[in-house]
Image (cartoon, rainbow over all chains, first blue to last red; front, side, top):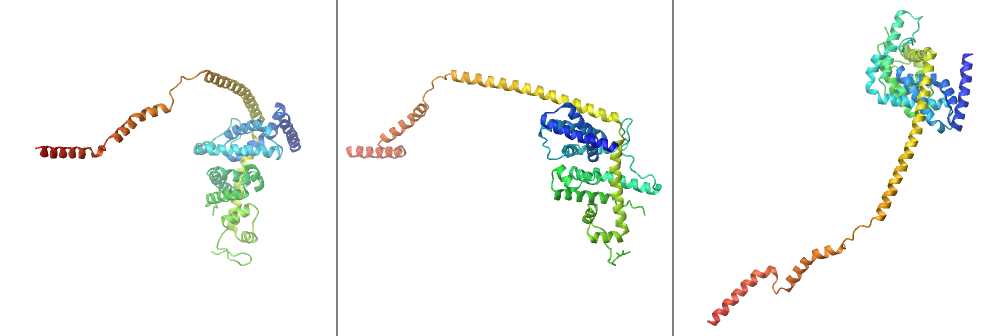
Length: 204
Length: 173
């Protein structure tokens, strides 16, 4: 039921987005677009930048930019794809500009907690596994997370979209505007790096 | 210890990075499938990778889903405020642009009027100074041409004159 409601909200937002694009930007219409897509845009950005505060700020930037460019939205792709493309480019630009501050963010992340909100680095583990398996899994998880942090912005975005967001190569091509061959090349380097980082976590 | 595949093919080499990518993209060849079915080490490695990336994805998804509604409301409020501020800036900016354009146009027009009304003082012809500057040189050339003896031969001419005068004096004696 909740899924159906969300879908209806999105469809209404698509109609609102098209209407906004044709007739000028209406505040109420735009708010419906924001309401329908803010979670998915936040999640995409968070998968790439892996910093909740930055993801929240970049989500705002994404909608601000979308508002500025809504008149140029021709409906050739879906509104979600168009917003996703803006979000990915913003996240990439952020990573490129903030690469030097990576260690500071990494050190802060494990203890980070938005007041009253869940901790970002926690969760995701299978509670039913034995303590030993859980320990090994957490070690592998930490290594993968650190390896992903060390990827170049492009590699990281491609890796996150493919393996965290389940984008197909074609969807990544559309979202990032790069060729499939380039995407595969980024994926190859990213996976090789992450694979190397996991060596020694098999727990013999 | 050497592994053996189901078709008794030796598995002394594990999956390469290329083959790994094939597996992760679901484009694996029959050879890779055969290897995976017979190689527990590669299976386990692939499984660990998938588990870890899946956990990272769930972590983010779980985090976003667990954020309370006030967080999203605040986000919407901030977006609306920034959009409104951006629109105000744009309006203000367009007024400033129009004002700047008007002032620039007025300044250009004023400059054009000043230039048109201002007649520069008459200056001597550009040829005259060149001509007057050449006059001494021309005079020197004329003087040199008028000379009976070229300047370069003047010392020799003096010597010749002296000799001739000496001969004349001795003949007179």
